Image (cartoon, rainbow, N blue to C red; front, side, top):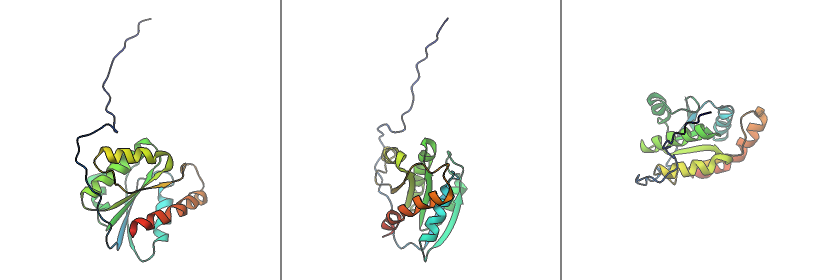
Length: 169
């Protein structure tokens, strides 16, 4: 039996970069919040819980496919609010795109809050830092979310509301 060994360079998404550090946008007077749903199981339930918990605000919805970047139209729609809340990062590719989409929005001047599961929080923070935004707002929700009944997802979503409200102050 012959075995062929091929060496390949693989890019580490968390590797040191030469990117300049960018500050996150200050959360100012928020009147309109965009909820960016990446269509992961449970993400809409979480964002609906956020919407029902934050009284006196106007909400816009934007949707994008899980595990992929938001298109130009989707990111522009997400940027129409005074703040964008993105969900849900609960696996590697979904967490990657929640964070990278949040960084794109921050670059457009829109403050963001990204919701990621506690299992992927450290990865999300390192990814944000590697892309020049170590201060990106990330709220962690208890893992897992996928595969749970709606009431269990709502229970977990209610637990993160104080952290979201803290970011709005």
